[in-house]
Length: 233
Image 1 (tube, one colour):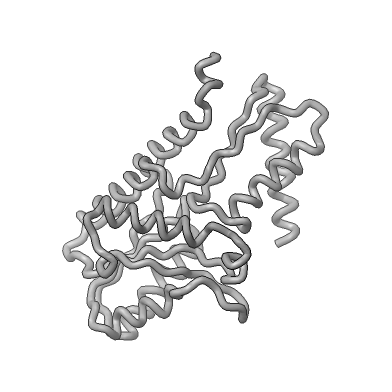
Image 2 (cartoon, rainbow, N blue to C red):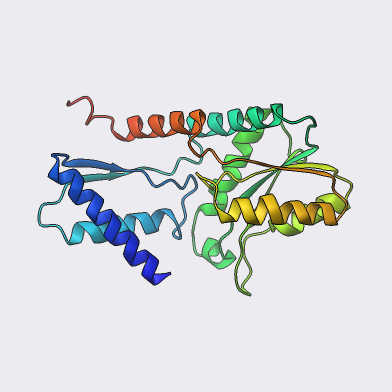
């Protein structure tokens, strides 16, 4: 983890230097973590600060705000869900929004992450016209013995199947792009858990990735953070 963090710092510094060399002295950094956490968004800020610390000529830098409640983000999630479900020959009884977890202790110390996840879920329910039973939320990817944010995704999937839910869709709103934690942990592991406990139909709704809704979201965020600078030419 420490080695990868150092590599990220070095990469961030190199990219900023390249931008400076071609004449860009005002740079916006967009952390692609919708919900703020010290474990994610703050690590991007730390990497940017470390890179700036080694530069004699520093650019003006803005860090993009968390976008957990941004209308363009909620709209992109809604469009992604509806497009994926339209491709199926069945419809889910429940949609589960599974967010990456953090240790419960971090939330108790003031990390706003769970509050941001809850607000994203609330807004997504409103956009889809869903209630708390048809659009549920949970937390995945816990490590170690410490208690993490609950409810846990694997336990929730098992409980839904055991409770009679036969058709389940899962979306992972905290991930900007699919990775092992969505494709292996959810698409493979989650599906196996669901069927083992009595479920029948399971699907993972892809992350926004490079989809048109995802690109539209990035454009909206970039234009928002560049406001003022763009007007100045």
